[in-house]
Amino acid sequence: MQIVRKSSFTANPWKNGGGITHEAIRVPAQGNPFRWRVSVAQIDSAGPFSDFAGYDRKMVLLRGGGVRLTFGGGDPVVLRNVGDLVEFDGAVPTDCELLAGPCTDLNLMVSKTLAGVRVWVQRVDGPYPLNAAHPGVTLVFAIQGSLVLEGARAGTASLEPWDLALISPAEAVAVRLASEQAPPPLVFFATLDDNSP
Image: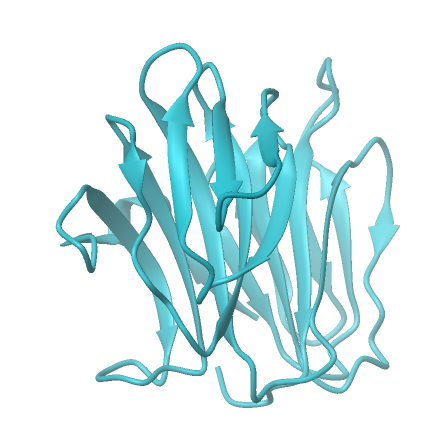
């Protein structure tokens, strides 16, 4: 189990120069192309997203009044509430409109060469065991609230908001509340069939 703290994220300009992203992890750690990447992006103004042909993108609203995304001139998709999730092809021209001021979003970009990618967002209101039989890495990102991860081999680790955990294949880990919280913590999960974080 590897913990990547929000404080260790690295700020980089967007590929198209239109904003700033704070990279949590990239696999491999250096260079391009990467297999997958997790980052937190600031969206301060409307405009186009960078072209990421060859990648599937998973985006979650973390903070702000929401965004309206238009893909290739088609029907828009609105992320209005924290935790709203959208998945789209990084090659499709994407325009972003801010609904009520600047926003921050979580981005998971995964190479199309990786199969078996699954993402979901949910509130954790009690012990939540992760599937130790999954063949690849599992990502746990605390959107809101504090969590505790308990592993049979890896021990115990805490996650504060916007911290990221990477759980190795076949590692039995349960997600628990750090304390009684209202509302319960909101968490982004992803499983990737890639065994080399």
